[in-house]
Amino acid sequence: MNNGKPTVLATFEDIQFELKDRIVKADDTWAKTLYKKSVSSKLVNDIKAQLNMDCGRFDGVPEDANTRSELYAPLVKLLNSIIGVSGNSKTRNGTRQAVSAKGKQLHKRVVESEVSPDIVFKATGSSFELPRANRVPNVDAHVGYTNITTAIELRLDSTTNDVERTATKEVQRMCISAKEIFFQQPNRLFLYTLVVTEERVRLIQFDRAGVLYSPLFNYHDDPDTFIRIVVGLSSMDDAELGLDTSVQFQVIDMKALGTIRVLDPKTNEFTNYKMRSVDPFLRREELFGRGTRMWDVEDADGTRLYVKDAWIDPNLTPEYIILLKAKGVKGVQQIVDYEDRLGRPYGEIRYFRPRCDPDYFPFVNKCFQRLVTVRYGVGITTRNKTEAEVLGALYDAIKAHERLLDSGILHCDISLGNILFGGPNAPDGLAGILIDLDLAIKTQHDKYPIDGRTTSWAHRLINTIGHGDQEESAEAKRAFLASDLKLSIIPEGWSKRCKTLVVAFHDFIDNIVSEKEEIVGEMERAWEFSAMQVLHSQKRAHYQEVLDIFEAALPAHRAPLAHASRHNA
Image (cartoon, rainbow, N blue to C red; front, side, top):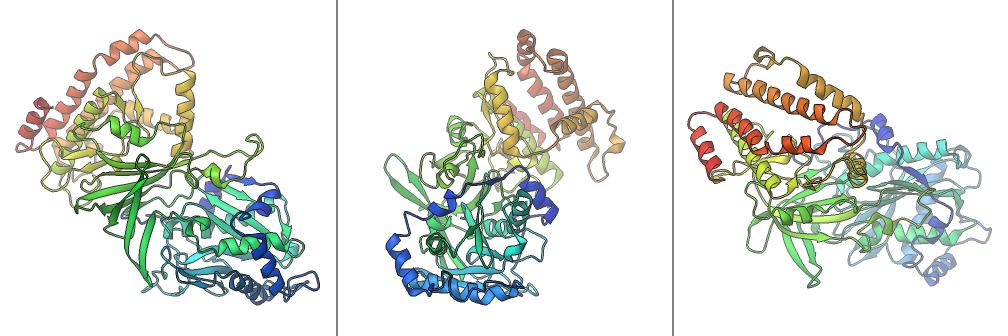
């Protein structure tokens, strides 16, 4: 992920893999109760009175359609009639309109597909903007994933049913639109979409935990439910649509300015942070999981900061708790503000999913959290940085990792994406900054790591960071460590000092892993903990050995600074 843009577009096969084990069928009460509190019975009756249903059907919808094309015009007319009578078609806050997308190519940014929805609810307002389709050939410039509240796919009634295989295929196709909407509407929390035939309708919900779909129901026989859903999906209340109302934009065709609010639960007051760009500089294209968004903002004094939004497992220690504990630790990301929406409406996925038997209706609940932190420099993988700058940043990040461990926190998620340069004119010792402590844990050197609590934490961690063959991954890493790494294998372009560093670091890690393997064996039973304590007692020497390896690779003008920061830590 670079500058909030995906590096590779997702294929339909990627979508099928992403949806695996995340699709759940709801019972028939879910769709019938949706929007029941916000759309009154009086409004539903008023709308029915304006529609011609003398024959027990919505007027104009063909009873025996032969092609999908026969459904576009009558359904768009019906939907706009409902939206119009509800009062949602035009207010001072925006507009809503059902629009046929037949023959239109909606601008895609994360999925490689020509599939577009059949009907959409086009919207204007503070969360919507025209598609950024200028200079993009063959895409619609007026309707896109940036300015719709929902997507609708049309099917002939004879081609759909409630067989799991059929419903799954419909969810997979709709997931194309869902991925685009979540990516192109960065304040999106959840999304409702519809599959509609000449007789029946299916409701589908996408959120960061997975997908929920309803059984098909006959909307001519149950017009009240259908009307409520249409009114709800065209609502002027962004929260009802699944949008985060604490993220606000000023829109004149396109988003021009934006603010993000953070609620202080003690005072119940908001702090506003002004966006420096209306686009997050980091946004994950994956539909499920943490859904991380990072924004470049500034406070009322003009100080530049970062805002990070993410959905986390409420059973894990929140990142803000870890960051508060790490406050003042040199070289580690520093927290300024935070908001935890645990227990609040729209703050947990379970609040916008129906109650259910977890054995029958499983999903991993997630909680929305927002962090505001100090702003640092660019990522360590940024191009146009010298070898010396990269090594200097890594050196200081290793020092920060040790300080963090000394404070009782183990990072647990070190990667190139989680190390930033300290920024222009960074003070000595702050050339590299450790960030993203959302998977960090409090160290417990007095307990065995294999106990019930830690094992369940490990399982949750694996689920959090995604699926994959963990055993195959571990074997590949072990094979690399066991290999005889030679300088000649390392690509040209790196200095001999740097190549020597890589080989020395490889050998160091191999030795540590070998020592641990002698202690833990196959990790099938508890080991002699005293042996691990002996290994841990050498922590300071181990860090120093690694720092010496890096210091030897630093240029002469940088090495004295590293040496000084070592003694001033």
